[in-house]
Structures are given as structure tokens and as C-alpha cells.
Image (cartoon, rainbow, N blue to C red; front, side, top):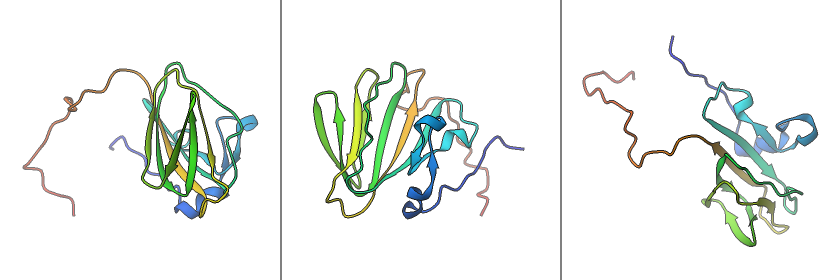
Length: 142
């Protein structure tokens, strides 16, 4: 048996209905901690949705974890240390360790602000993944 798992997080418009978080005290509507559902070792991911005008309500910073925010719908803003960055569908924001961050959906957003937050830590990634192999002779499964 191969070592992989599959889960369904639903369509973007369904994300708001999920209530979750890293623990019960920090759970909210529109957050799903996917790495709590899958056996992930080196990366983590949350699926998020805020209604127009809603904000995180807190700042946070990581000492070891780097985050990548991939915005899929809506319009919002991220606070990054002393800066405010506009975000919308197609915006990708990398946030390094030691950078304070928060976010909000703009009150006039045309819909929910939806994004994936991908977290990782550990060793530096090589520019070209050097741990892969190709097998041009292996037949395609379809």
C-alpha cells in the first residue's frame, strides 16, 4: 500500500460552514485545519473564509514556521508588521518567521475572503528539487 491520504474540503462556497481551529479556544466559523485530518509531517494547511467586514481579531508571529497565503476569492487586507497589503483572488503572500501578521475581509468585498494558509518549517528548500526521480518507461495509469 502506498503512503498517501485523500480528504475533501468541499467547494469554496462551503468553507464558511466549517467550524474549527487548532484548539477549541481558538476555533471559529470558516476555519478548517486540514493537517489535523491528514497525517502531515513537514507541512500544514488551513482552509479559511471570512465574511465581508470580518477580521482575525488578533496578530500572531511564528519563530520556526514560514507561511504561504494563497487567496482564492474575495477582497481583503493583511497587516504585515507595519505594512498593510491588499489581497484578492490570485494574490500569494509569503510570510517569514518573525513577521507579525493579521488579516481581514474588506467590508465591501464582493463575497467571502477565502484563502489557503500553507505552513512549513525545517530545512531550506532547494531551488530545484534534487530528491526526485523520473521513470519515462512507467505507463500512465489512465
